[in-house]
Structures are given as structure tokens and as C-alpha cells.
Image 1: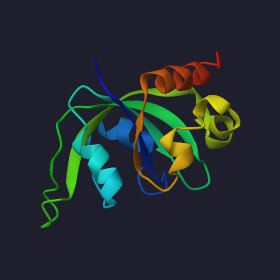
Image 2 (image 1 turned 135 degrees about the horizontal axis):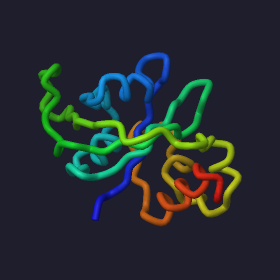
Image 3 (image 1 turned 30 degrees about the vertical axis):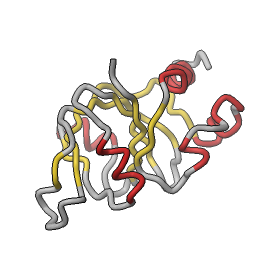
Image 4 (image 1 turned 180 degrees about the vertical axis):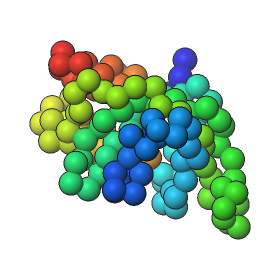
Length: 138
């Protein structure tokens, strides 16, 4: 059974559309110790929501992690790691941070509690609820 994650990206730097166009990317640039801890727990086959930060602040697409974590080949610091991800599909309806915060179900969601983290775990129940919201069933 896969684990679930939320990966944040600034869409003006790298968007879900960029991932779709490229077909695969190295998810890099993470330096926060807590976010790196989460990345070390990722495994090939896990799934992730791609979340646009900045002016958008919404989950926009689904991706799959297709590698276990490995040292960032562009960095000399071995604690900096990356994973490879591929796009799965765009969400039918993006799920905004405001909608997530308005739902008491997400009170303990790391996106709400630790808003600065670029990589956060998503429980199976939270994952199902977020997908339901994206499909207009939420």
C-alpha cells in the first residue's frame, strides 16, 4: 500500500504543467530538515498531490514517486536528497488551501499545522477526502 504526500512547488518556478510536459522530474530543492525527513520516508510507488504555492495555494495534480530517495546529484551535501516523480493526472477541480482550512476534518493536517513545509505526509483518510473534494464530492 502506498504512502501519500503533498509536494509544494511555486508554479512560476516549476508547475504541474511543467511536470506533465516533461513526463518525469527529479524533485529537488528541499532543504528543511523536517521536509527532508519526510522525503527519506518516500518509496517508489507512493503517490503525491502537487500543490501550487504563491498566489494559487491549491492542490492541482497527482503524481507518483518512481524512485526511492537518493542523494541530490547537484549538491555536495549528502543529507540533501531527491526523488523522481511522474505525473498521473490533473485534478478535475483544484482543492484550495481555504477549502482545506475550512474543513474541520483537516485540523491536524500538516499542510494546515506546518504551512511552511514543502513536503508533508497525507494520511489515507485525508487523501481520500482530498480526492473527493477534487472530484466535487467533498
